[in-house]
Length: 180
Image (cartoon, rainbow, N blue to C red):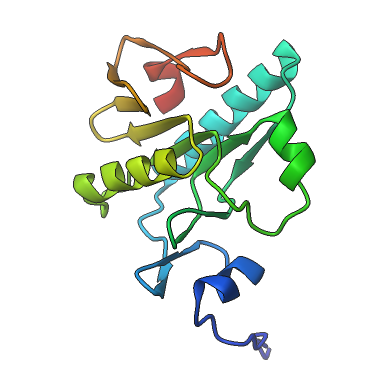
């Protein structure tokens, strides 16, 4: 059997990345960076978060869309958050774009064993500066979820009920249910 790999023009700039972002990549520091560190646990939590946000937006009638590994533009960078929610207004405005030209209003990053805490926190602040209203940083190994908004940072741990602060009003899930 012969495996044929399609040939694409190289990604040499943020504009190139914005036109055709390869799966599981980001554009950071002027270069293409592969997102790595995905584990079974990481994938399970990503699915749980997607499921809960989507079920809530559907049952509440809020509308909008929930995505996984979807590209957006930040401060001269291209990012692909693990899970993201786009409001109905922004779906109407940007829903057919290849890459969202700003951060998603509600964004989640699931921290992998290969991630550095400072880099993940910097990424959350980057999202907030470019349109995010709320960022969730999920730390599976210590069972923490840090919820970051422009004016507040909260840490939820095992046994706590986690709630959105600025987007998807009324949404709640226990940390344990999210991380199982």
